[in-house]
Length: 213
Image (cartoon, rainbow, N blue to C red; front, side, top):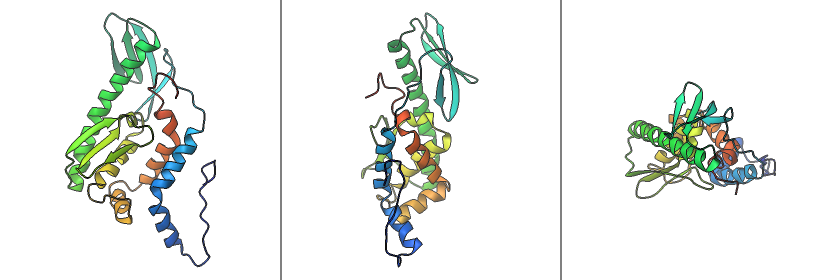
């Protein structure tokens, strides 16, 4: 893989396209990790904490509005994200936004997990929301699933893909061809969702940081 994320496969001429596809699928986790590393090399600009700034939520581009108030809180009004706060400092506004986004993520992830768990006939034993440095989610042998809550900023199909991905591991604890076939049965365009996560990884994982690491 090159630094511009171009993937090249060198193989004998006798290897079939199907064999190449199978090999790529078997190396998907490694490829995703390398793509994430490349994406982190790109410089990013954190969203501003001021009225008129653009903030993402469920794939929408919202306008941030900061209003002075004795009562603190965040409210979504049409296409505006209204933050009521007594102070206009970053250390005051950012925690309010972080808490609001986390609450929305919690609600959405629980809803979509229940939906796809039913469709896949699986029952996760525990659902957790975390902020991962490099992963987007995980599933363990105890049937526990976890998601990076910051994916709430992504389009709905991307959040669904993450849910589907982790739940499918309850049936296939690997990244085999059977696993990806099951993922595809729930979201035929799952590859587009994976691309979105790769392309926006650095930005999404930095949105709610006090500063860039």
